[in-house]
Image (cartoon, rainbow, N blue to C red; front, side, top):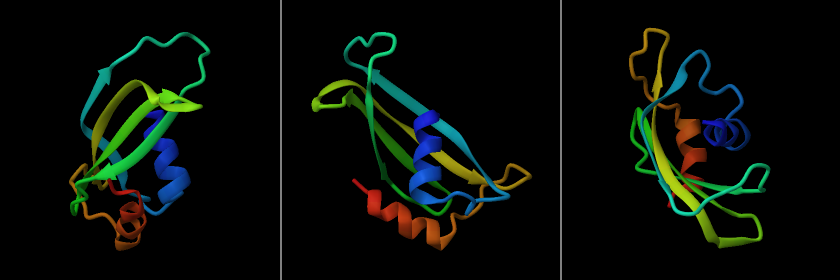
Length: 103
């Protein structure tokens, strides 16, 4: 969740979704190699399958200086919902920004 929040806040919008919120509909992680406490790890983030109310964020956790040395990868399907927890359409401005991160 930390990488997702940092990605959305720093790359997409600081407040574009307000008062709506993002929820995780599904998530999966493939653990490939062991990591250790306080080890530096880079998280590469992209998006795929952008739809009106949901999208997938793909993550690759790797060594900072060698992106081919992968520790884990995975995804989250996130949905934008309103205060009543009903799915709502992503704003066009957000879709435009998200497409720059498509894989």
